[in-house]
Length: 258
Image (cartoon, rainbow, N blue to C red; front, side):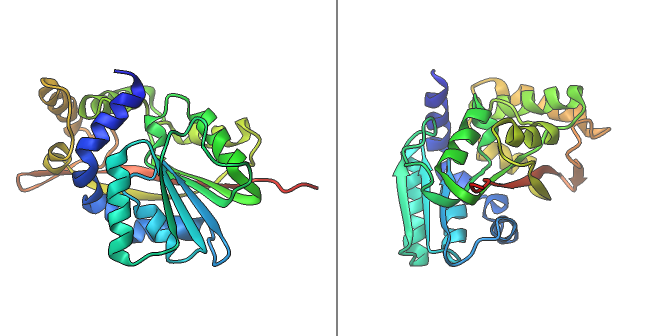
């Protein structure tokens, strides 16, 4: 499959289980993103690779208008249903790709993307598109899981994630995420962190790995369990294995003309 086809295939299958996962719906985490961008009543927001629309709907409660774009039609269907359930009239949804974004330059005051950059083949190009559609003086934010700065741990983590979800490309380290911004002419971002709590069996139940890869995923995870080699805070609670993905909210401002 082409990479974009892998994404559509995976997230068509994941549309319901992903959108209903407790960590994805976490209201405190969503509020943290809105707060980190300093969103207000006059803002217009774009969520890039918006998935089931949770981030868009969180912003819509605060801003003038919020738009979500995603490659997967099934995710946009979930987003529309969520907005209708919440009675939100200040939202727009669009099925589309991120390279290029189908919006005019300087269209939004806040441009954000959550849990998508590790799926992008060219994250710097996506961030450059986010900058383009952001108005001068506006805000660009990337929210994503963070790989360990230890190359061995990072490789193991990314291998585990690709086994679980073949559309995963690579989780970036914090230094790599921070370097993306000045690399395209944005100021270095300010960062906020939180932990995305998860549980092994629940994660596998809402994932759709290739046949035969589940056993390899478990072996990779088990190899890290004794010493927490992947740095996920792995712990046993009865017969359940719990862990947490480290997540950063990296926020920068697009410079206004002098």
